[in-house]
Length: 466
Image: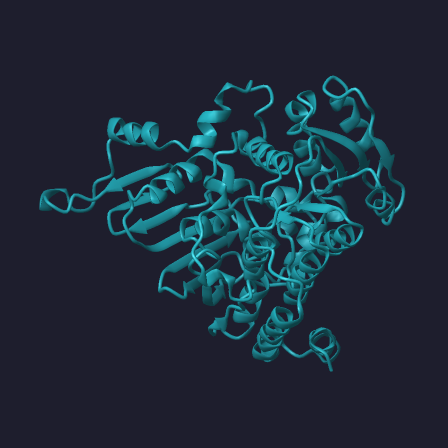
């Protein structure tokens, strides 16, 4: 039995016989590790450092024009006006979403994108066009992996919303397809481009934090109204995950920036994780008050996942979209010389020569602003002259993300994140589910990079693209 068949058989057996997910945890991880070793021997080479010939004007197709797809299309306005990109085609289940998007694009792009709509497989016709370079995928989670794989098989590059995968088998399939087709497959994680996270990253790179030991991230965001309403998620697809699964379903907003801080995949890598979920109460109570049919919820109100790296650094990652807890990504990083924590952003700088400065005191506003001014990330400084009219989307980070993606393709440079980055960040979801099902036992983290993480290299996101 080959590895792919074995993985499928595990999933089928668990579903058919009612075997608890955690029962076969070790077998699943072992099968992934064996497949990675097999891929390393028989594959077509790593995608680390991969680049293509420059594309002067990137021809883009977008699949999914719901809330997220509509916003990301707006991030292209400056790029299409300046001949850096052109939106060639759009796909969605409903025509009215396409028409709304096209109407907004009219004042920025002369050509009108081709529309694809009407059934759930119409997107394939878009992908099969021969006049596209890049496909942007902004659909419900379960579509991300099959759409990304089909896109690469049709000879196009992929930029996919988070998470790019939520099963271990899909993680392996995506990597294998990218390596075989030699196509970019980048998961677009916008929080890696937020001004606060880039400020912290720049300080880390400049040595302000000394040696890093620990980081914390999260997705704490009250989504009860969103998940219980048909307005936000078509067919209420998101809450259905909470009815069937228990773990951390939305890892990347926290773990993406943290992985940059810790140089994951570039000299260090995640080695193991433990995950536990609290009992569930808040979402089901809200569903009952709203007379919603989605009142049976499996996912706990709070999931906490602990991760350890090969070099001994630790990470705490949390997930709570059930309660009224105020929004936070925590964004905490601890080093031997400094500490930062977000929401609100605070900074502590150690003074090893004067004991009276040790501990318990964040920098005052003036000192904080001095650091902020000195260590604002170069890409934020570079883009400050572009009109705020274009720099929208979660405070501007969406624009920075799309700008960097298209500029890398314009210049023929490797992208800011590799396929392995997106997979590592997404794989925490199925691994957390395995650990929760195993009463929080430690789960080995597969080496999706095939060993390339052991070689130190600079973070691509730190490059000046001028």
